[in-house]
Length: 404
Image (cartoon, one colour):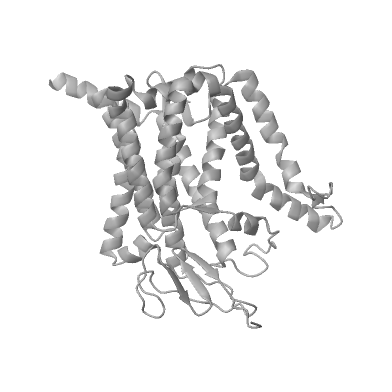
């Protein structure tokens, strides 16, 4: 018994501290951190919170790209939080039964998303280069004119195309895990940057539903469908065809055999909540070191290590979300309760400043639980105060038509 326990602990140590495992975990943490940073940028650009004036803090005037992305960010609502795991379950069953038939259609769709995501990740770099070049060559065009129905093509887009094209060619010729990891890496950053959870209430709903989703499809699906549906689909998508789908970060192990693998969903779902904590910290203190985001990241690492430990002990496939969900939600709840900020955290309380009408007056919102007029609000309620409409985390300014 003692020998078996010692051997298990040795295997756990080798797995947890294998360079492959540490690299995958580091990539996941970087994706979440950078995605949170871009998410905060878009939020600030769209709603005026710390967006500044016509020039950024670096002295570089914004080209409007950040504002366009910020205005097109998708906000996850309650209905979305309920529908997502249902749609994911339907898709999983379709892949379980018909993966051979729709594989190439799925491959095209995922690679298109990866191509778009790679352009998105490069965009800030090329935007800076174009700006610096324009400072020396003012007459250099910043867009390529085309036909009227398409409009001018930004120079940043043209410059960002060669790298994705080269990576796609390398992927089709080699099918190396390096290329699939790059594609998954960019998809994760794009998802975290352009999807926004408005408050912890919706985050808890989304994560708890996906907790049940993972629990069912990994541990219970075999009793109904005769096989572990989640594992079968993952194995088929990453090993069953000539080109592996970029649906996970996977790096070969060094100290043991096999690969260290972490699914895209295991990063994106908790990552959306961690991005919200990052924005919450920034809005309340102006920086992400206030505690919620850091606590959440520590909890994320603990959840990954707990999942790997249980993988070795049970010798069974482990759904990472059943460990990541409590390890990210509980620290935020405990810290919020200890700081008496749980109500603000739960409903998305913040203090943004937003331009109103033509005078750019600044409005400071109190805790989400209390409106400026002292009226209690819930996450679903729209509160109209003067000319402003407050909806959860979002601030939409409405100016009445005085002519009427």
